[in-house]
Amino acid sequence: MKKETTMEKKADVRNGTKRLIFAGIALIIEIAFLAISLHSWLGKYAGTFSVVYHLLAVIIVLALCSQERSSSIKMPWIILIMAAPLLGVSLYLFIGLNGSTRHMRKRYEEADRRLFPFLKQDPEATEDLREWNRGVYNISSYLREYAGYPVFRNTDVVFYNDAADGLAAQKEDLKKARKFIFMEYHAIEDAESWHGIQEILEEKVKEGVDVRVFYDDMGSIGFITTDFVKKLESVGIACRDFNPVSPFVNLFLNNRDHRKITVIDGRVGFTGGYNMANEYFNVTHPYGHWKDTGVRLEGQAVRALTLAFLEMWNAVKDEDADDTAFAKFFPDVEYSSSENGFVQPYADSPMDDIHVGEDVYASIAESAKDYLYIMTPYLIITDEMTHTLALAAKRGVDVRIITPGIPDKKLIYKITRSFYGNLVKNGVRIYEYTPGFCHAKMCVSDDVVATCGTINFDYRSLYHHFENGCMMARVKVVTDIKEDFERTFPVCREVTQLYRDDISQGRSLVQLVLRLVAPLL
View 1 (cartoon, helix red, strand yellow):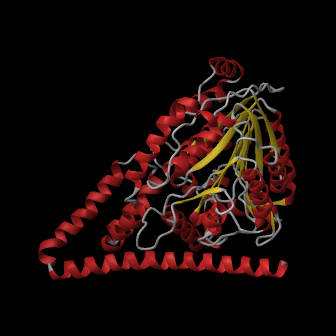
View 2 (cartoon, rainbow, N blue to C red):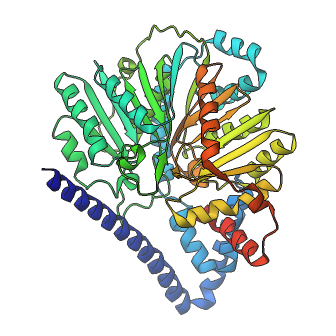
View 3 (cartoon, rainbow, N blue to C red):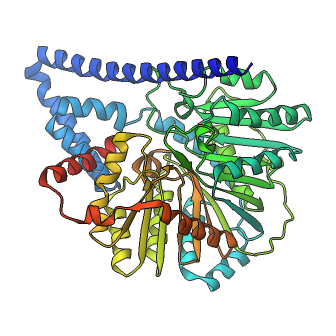
């Protein structure tokens, strides 16, 4: 039996990888076909349409200039379009401009219109937070006023410095479910770690529990086969996939669901950096020891995670049957936390013009007084974020960033390292996690505030993906996260001085090019 499972798993990976390769080749063919068609068409009518085509390039450039985006993101497109109009315009139409965005935005707006009334802000919580720490209160106010997510007090938080511990805790809580289970993950691997979860879910279905699983098709493409949804539904588990990869049909590939959420009965919730795949729990070791973290919430703040899941579940496809009543998923939880701290889960979406994840990180950096510790698998940031982190270091804040020592994507690893120089020259310290790949996404500052969630310090997470995080203050978990950083620094290699020293002009040029193309990847 074990041998058969292994062979099936290998077949699943091969099939998923083939589908990913086919999708990539199909996209290249589409772009090439458009470029060749335009070239042939313009070649026949060059005298009439050459001006029109170049005018289109100018219009796109002007439109980019007028957008309220970071110049770090706009400039690579502008340079490419102006230097090679045919290629630049073709790439922008397929990658930079998503034709399905407008339609999807309407679906998300409708889902949010029905869901957000279930999140109510307790005015006493905001007043207590304002009196306790004005800096954290300001960040919390931003999340409440612009993202719609209130701050909660009656919530206990547990931090897991190892994803395997988080998974074990999830299994125990899943066994206690009585009404519903929601699970949303960027990647699910049909292997041992997931099988342990699925066994519990199948038992819960038999008990009458409403069990739903939601995953991103691109994120899971190398882990499962195309019939994964059918396999789950055959045992009574409702399952949906986000934005299936459909070569020659679906152009909305740039925006992926990167969230990681589990909700149980509206009372207990989990989030963090780990997906439901073996490597996250060190069952397999493709990149050395995998470092990942997560948090468990119990109490009123779980309502925000419930909303984030239902938003995706009800907005993803026109043909899906959406929920008609949400109240049953938002029970009035009578829960009293022993800490009486502040917990504020939040979500970020590319369907609006607000970059919640980036704004929270930047605000914490701007408010830091003594230290700011950051852990991220990728460090591909805008000039504005670079300036914010550098300025914090110049103010005397101890700013340290941990990135992987062993990369999962070599090109992205090189791009990450290309951002070190501008940071370390201004006082930021960089550490690389030598045991393997560091996938955790969290930060902590001044023993006051911490975040843990799915949001990387890179363009994809900050601008293109559906993400979620959790800000925590005046709770023990803030100290727990700081202590995890203090245990991790000694097993890292500090590379600050290496990248502070002057480097060759050739290497500087390569790094400049890497930073320039980063927003296009």
